[in-house]
Length: 280
Ligand SMILES: NC(=O)C1=CN([C@@H]2O[C@H](COP(=O)(O)OP(=O)(O)OC[C@H]3O[C@@H](n4cnc5c(N)ncnc54)[C@H](OP(=O)(O)O)[C@@H]3O)[C@@H](O)[C@H]2O)C=CC1
Ligand SMILES: O=C1Nc2ccccc2C1=O
Image 1: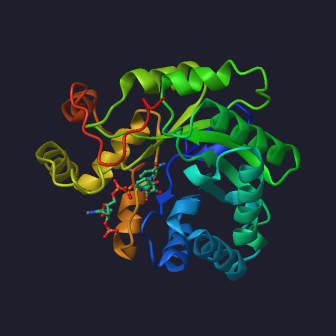
Image 2: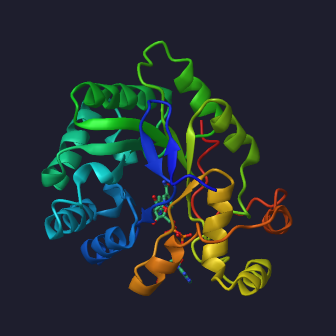
Image 3: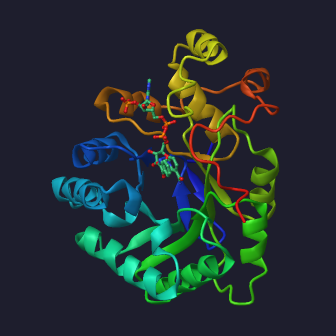
């Protein structure tokens, strides 16, 4: 039986999966509906331009049933974009993120969106994020699109006060990043798996379709389940209210070892998005 929560290295938890919100233009409506279905993790970013709308969705959901729908039940993730790196710049950017979400009061998990700005900028940004934890406005911090070298740089940095709790990276059966995922696991860093459908490119994969048919589920559910069963936290995105519920329903069935192996493509590296895990 899979747990509904993934324990982080700072003692807090992530839900077993969440909602991606890139390109969501009806974010308030989708986030509110997702929370009503049972999603408890919302992944946004400064880049997406919808932080305010996502927060509004959470606030409206809380307002619907204040006794049961509580702020502390939701994990709100946002990410600093690449032009927000550097100590002062990041301080200002974090303030901006907090202004966007106002009524939510704090950010559950703040990530550096990508390691593209070089060592000095990466570490200065992280320093500003650590201070936001000390100020109580951010509960946990982590990174995204970090490769092993970027993680080693951070873990060996003398200024490290709070270990990154998570690395958000593209992971799917066609982008397994086994070495990086193993490194994260060995260092107690959770893997948040973005683009679990390879940005919809793989939703009709014949193996996923065949397994889905056999189980009476959708191929999307098979791909989300693959990720959850690997121990990752997938964050599929949909703007479609009907798909929200099925994508979330992945605890009612299991994939056998053989089915997992059929889906695995360890020798394929086909990211659907940017590939910056090896940048200097
Ligand atoms: N940190 C980073 O650098 C990155 C983070 N991310 C995060 O990860 C999230 C997910 O990645 P994303 O790139 O959106 O790609 P996904 O792999 O989640 O695929 C999303 C696509 O799949 C479609 N889809 C969703 N559910 C179904 C379904 N049940 N059946 C058929 N099609 C479906 C969606 O269309 P529709 O909406 O019409 O249903 C959309 O076109 C992002 O939204 C973002 O939050 C993504 C990329 C980079
Ligand atoms: O969701 C995302 N889609 C993207 C495309 C390019 C760069 C970053 C991202 C995201 O974070």
